[in-house]
Image (cartoon, rainbow, N blue to C red; front, side, top):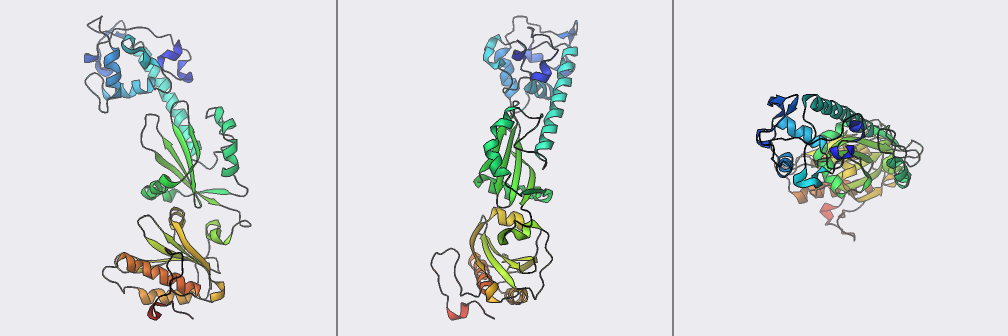
Length: 374
């Protein structure tokens, strides 16, 4: 049957049935092969190619039997997700190797690659709908993702592309290891499509059919409509103005990242935010509305948060505190000292004594270490 040729449906249309051919793999080179009546011929007509062909095809590096281009061609033709020819063992005989037939295979494989690229482009855009994957994808996807759709398309959620986050692939991969997959489907050719959700980010990845590395293809911010945005996510729902010194601090949140790095995010009443932390060289940074805040908060864990409106602390107060701490540990700040600054900043914004986000019980510090109050 045509299925035995290892070609997907678009390739099988109009091609002749498989035919046996004598083929010497020791001299197998499509780019420089001798032909007879338009077909490649082997010197030894009794040669069994099955036991030699598959190892040459699966080799990590091209071997003498197959040139690099030939190996790539036949890997696509005999894609194990579409072909069962390997089960033939030593009885296996490749398809016709005439120049015209090989050119036909290359043309059809090129058409399949074009479809595959269109699939990826659509999947990695915010137009892809898990409820209706569309004609580019297997029909079974449309009916099998209804349960996931309720989670992925909650009312009011909007996807906003964040291409700049793709440059932080290492940080994303670390988060993907711990994140749950909200969408995981494999196409008939073996290409795998996955969607992850963590924090306010949605990450979409693809993985080649031959077991290559999973690749981050697109990152989106999952932003609620303005009417639905809560205090915890209001700075992700719109582009706020930079906070000014007179703005009161409404909320403080302490985060910890992989590697035990901590930082504090201050939300101001004017709609802006400030991220502050101490670096290894003792510098204390102050970043209003940082561009990478969303990816950092989405890949980190919340240690604690506090509503700070009643404390009456302003952004100007916190800026003065940051300036007083900047450089105190130069030229090298230990992890405990960096963590201490974050604790002090959190407590000052909340109007509390120093406590540790790593402890369940409140731990009052010595008087000299108490959070300054207004």
